[in-house]
Image 1: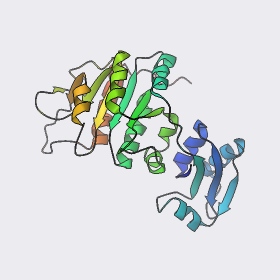
Image 2: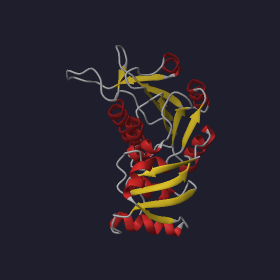
Image 3: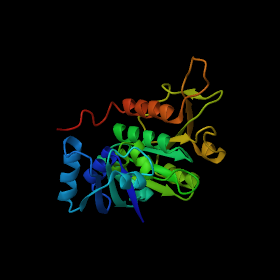
Length: 254
């Protein structure tokens, strides 16, 4: 089924990644053709995507009131992959496995923020549960500033079974958690074949997911609040894992 990506960066990154089937690019008639807009139009034309000028109210309706910046791209649904594709990506890059699993996160802003960081630190793939959690929707794409268009994402029927499959491929499953008697982040070497697991907002990891983890880590805190937002906590852990790998891949090759 078709969907509408909105916002200049999500639209630009979708065109740049060139992984979806594109149907048409719609521009509000008041948008000036300069800077990013010029680049978006050029990429659309290079990919033979029809470009149409429409009244802004049409864009408002298609973006369902979200901040669209006058640009909407009609595309096919997100191109999910199999878990085997994630494992193959690590081999292709000749790097230790680096995955992120999200256990029934429900806020598109949190998911999008985590996916943006995952792309920034070079995560090889994302695991989402097929039901009850957030899919890769236009809202998630917008929250990730289009970064999700460059990521490999798999939707699995049973996250516990998927994590066990990773473990069978010598991947350590490490959950970020809170509570007593959990090792703090920084005391464990994360330069390993790694899948970092983040639990849902408010509830954290489900019991069976927690029991599947090889390790659980926590973020030390000395302030007055007991926990951080899941996207903030996940961002810290992802960067810690990348740092443990010696900032592998940075700076990017010119």
